[in-house]
Amino acid sequence: MDVLKNLEEYLDRSWKKDKEGFNSSSVAISENGNYYYSGIFESKTHILNIPSEQGAIVIAVANRDPKIKEIITLVREGEEKFTPNPLVIKFLIDHALRTNSPFSYKVYNQEGRLVFFSDNIFGLLPFYKPKIEPLEKIKDWKPRPNKVLFDNSKPLERQLLFYAKLGAETHFTSKTKSLYGSSVLSQGYIYFAGVYSSFDYKLGLHSEMVASLSALMDGNKEITHLCLVSTKFEKEVPQLCGVCRQFLIEIQQKTKVPIKVICFSWDERKKFEIELEDYLPYAWDSKKVER
Image: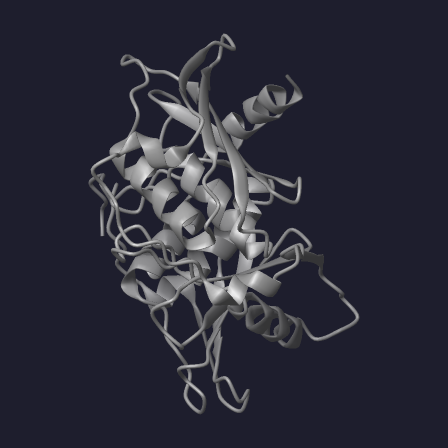
């Protein structure tokens, strides 16, 4: 199966702390016939970990293609064999509820054996029955790539601002009117995305994380710039939360490529910029670090 071959490649794109242990990659196949791939993102803090299924779906949303018909996952098992993750299943169910598009979920191991299957994601947690809340805003969405080639004949900051605002259009929520959007520059490309908000708020991803994840899973890991805007801050600049600062500093620590953060007010009149290491000078690390 060609999909499984592609998923093998994305296992190697997973952002892991080390080579050992469990790894997975997933593809979200949309009703429009498009394929959105992601590996996992492992954080030093663990709480920021992103499963591959979640990564694939948020990238699909960033591409304005949220209605999914199938999720396929490939697992590389460590000492323990694969068991379904209830949090992942809850996330998948919540997404299906908000798009009104139940989908199937298949998991294969590296031998190509099907180790888990459901033809309808709603059947996996029969006791979990939140209200179906399809998002009105996605009814008119048409797929649009969230990646463009950087045009070196035009000012970088203006391009980042333009695409961050475009990313805000994909802010995936039914609970708030405020929109956040981010863009990142990585190895000649600009990636952009909005927030993916969750029902419980715990499984959501901020726009900075989705834009960065889009670059990482496209194989372009050397992020040099990130831009943030929000309709909530019409005349003032927004700031990155501590979670996003930690998320980005872990990328910078691994790539050794400095990241510049640029924040604009929505009316574009105010700007704040800072080097990431100055923005979070004492990032948390799970290892003992000499200060």
